[in-house]
Amino acid sequence: MFPRFLQHIEKNIINESNFKEIKLEILLHLASLSQTFNRLFPEEKLETLRENCWVKDPFAFRNPESIVELNLLPEEESELMQLSSSYTLKNDYETLSLSVFWIKIKEDFPVLSRKSTLLLLPFTTTSLCELGFSVLTQLKMKKRNGLNGAADMRVALSSCVPDWNEQTSTPITLN
Image (cartoon, rainbow, N blue to C red; front, side, top):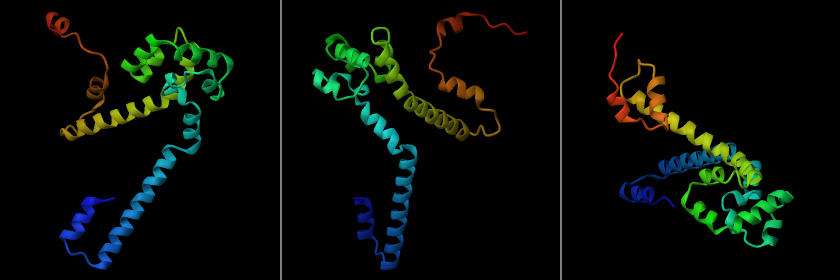
């Protein structure tokens, strides 16, 4: 399970008491990880995701019997049947990210799109928070500890692509 740890034990002579201490430390760390995962992903949320597995792959349910087993509302069932039978949308699903796919089809399948967006939104929010923290860490590591990093973070986290041609063609006026 831990090949490098075993290599370390084989290379270095480790007495029994040190080995027990290391083993206890590993067990404590694994227990801490388990508690963290249970706090971040409680069983209720996992159950909600299991019940709504159609969000991850709406094309896995081709026959009406499998769609009925999902316990969806009648209008959701109808939309999922239409969606899963469309080869054009299956191609879009395979080429686009999951969130972009659900947003793209919101006009044709409003009920499913809204429900899937609400289910996917927490993952996007968590991802953006992690990205923001990562950017902040990088900015702070560049010896900018005394500076306010808000402006740098805004630029680093922005999804807007600057139009460099317009930026360089406009003359700069100093007041």
